[in-house]
Length: 636
Ligand code: WT7
Image 1 (cartoon, rainbow, N blue to C red):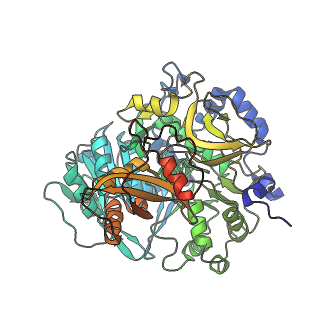
Image 2: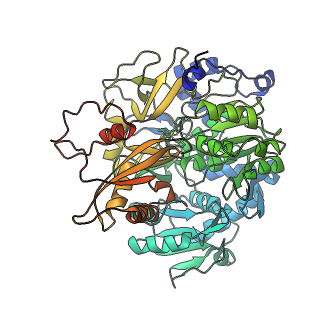
Image 3: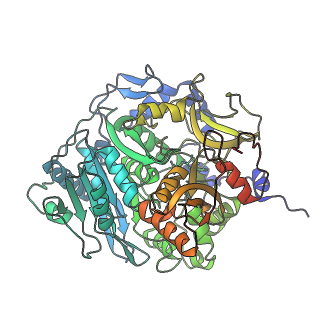
């Protein structure tokens, strides 16, 4: 029998939910509620907003008078902490586990909602004593330890904003983000544990503070207890500050406006300078809690594990804010999934009775590689739902996840969204029939389309650009400090229609299922992490031997994509294996290990247009050995 390609096959492969899932799900009739949410968008969101606690009700649900700078719930007063913590303290939830944390070495810490409140209030008072004020942006650069979450929540509580920089980033990435946010206060840790080794965050932070002049106060959590350099008058230990009388457990939550800034989170775009996407208290609270509740069908008895890092939007929305607003019990793990053995995750699912696991295709492929015997040694019967995010999931990985981890009884919620969207945009709910590799359909209130250059919808099954046709409460409000760029990147191309351009290509099949293909700009998804070709290129040219550089993404079995670099050296220099290695290390030192190129090729010239733009698609076509396409703009 001829073998159909795996993706073709998966388009006709359908998985239906069990009767049990249908019976217990919050959403029983998706189509009906979807129709209602589209016809009465503002009413739908107002109804969801009413389920939260507000100091003062909003006047207007959606203010679109300054498009595309939409505002939600204007006139309303709300603080996300009042919803994520304070209101739970008034009910039996006070005694519920908010947070289970396991360190890589095996140490365990747990916090009830009551205990979480104490930690957050104490640190909020510490921040206040350092002069942190409403509207100020505090940078947080930490490993996956509970204090990372406390620091985020403490900022929100006093109306300050946080900018979390992923702990896997390095010197230049951190320095650039501190500078852009003009942060005066940095919260970090001496290090974290990863594969039995210490990641030396404090040394990276020290070097970054040397490159950006704004930090006056640096608070360091002691996690690994190795020697670190602490500067007089600038550096303080977290645990020492938390022991002082100023760190009282009484702290009033600031009554912020719905549209007040909650955080900025940097993400890569097409230029070297990362964009600080800005999210707000009101709309983001409503959007993250609603999506989390309906898509993952959250119940009181659940134990929710989003195995992302809080340093990315996935962690912000679905480790921290959405789940805490929903009063869930969250799980967080510090280290590598295969340390000390590839059963580490499965062991924790069994040990803590995790009911929902949400992770990335890269993690699934990585764990699948070790073989079925590792998960099979554990009782995973507590699981009832699974999730995937970050990149398209290949059908092979989907089937393994479904069969070996979910025992064919757990629907997989493949959620498509972005740092910009704040929460799930295209996603199933548990009662929906699933097709492996498709994120299925738009969430309530959302309409998406796949269109060509001029905005005409392409035919079913054809590839085009993914757009979102409507505003939603969780949308980023702007790019911090650069509103023009916000318009240029997302809204300019389909200005006439008023659509948001996602930057992805996709297909919609005849059943209305969306199949996301990948990025169509100069953004690369490596192991689900988002990087810009321009960032990696500028790290390469910051090396003394490099005169020019171009980077492209090529498919990689485990990582989804890997970075390939092409480098022109300064006159008179010759590339060799040693220099290739030095350049890879340099990129890892500047941006972080995730940006380390797979290979560096030394070349004499790069394909460019007559106006001097590097034609990355030509490099890519050459590397893949496929047709180079239209070369008419190529310089002689
Ligand atoms: C890009 C956004 C949103 C959380 C993590 C990523 C890709 C994300 C999926 C999915 C196919 C996906 C897209 C998107 N992406 N989820 N389920 N299927 N692709 O956030 O770092 O802002 O990246 O990730 O290309 O544009 P992000």
